[in-house]
Length: 237
Ligand SMILES: Nc1ncnc2c1ncn2[C@@H]1O[C@H](COP(=O)(O)OP(=O)(O)OP(=O)(O)O)[C@@H](O)[C@H]1O
Ligand SMILES: [Mg+2]
Image (cartoon, rainbow, N blue to C red):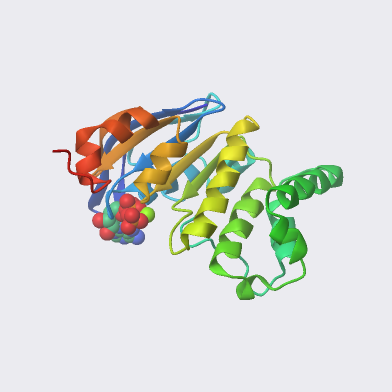
């Protein structure tokens, strides 16, 4: 579904991504893990069209999306939940969700997607009139994911959904990511919480200073001594 070859990207003269290639197949949950500043967000921003790649190919459903503007990429079925969530703080939960559904042509679809989101995150139904800015951090993350799901995207990209949240809230968000996978959804997940990410991902890539240094099945990487030492804080004797 998503095929990236030789992606290079950066900011002005500063190159950050040095030839990244990765794949996400339909129905897969794929994780990208890496330290702070490795370039994880830069990869997601390049895919979503928020940053113009300097070189390489980004194929999505057979389209070359590397030069398309962000709104055109969103229309092709790709949704990004950014690290900062970027909710409309003064609007209600319901209004934020409706804005996520604005790409749907038919009202019926919006209703259907809304029911699905409320099913995944019952707290959003219970608080649908509440102003987004007064929701807790965890509820805001749920709303950000819910808003992205309102367009029924073919590929959902999550940038560090666990950041700043308590283990209990992180657990319920990861439960939902798991349920999306069970329902056949496709997710590209960027995470600092390597344990959680490798546990939920079918496959994962390790990004170090803008390059992919390791890839494999989630459970394989979990057993890899390099990963255990560098990312899981487990030194094998
Ligand atoms: N707008 C920008 N202008 C210049 N440099 C940037 C910009 N955004 C990011 N960078 C630099 O690019 C590099 C990669 O940043 P990026 O945000 O992609 O990393 P990350 O892996 O997502 O890190 P984190 O885990 O902290 O979110 C860093 O060195 C960062 O300083
Ligand atoms: Mg980041």
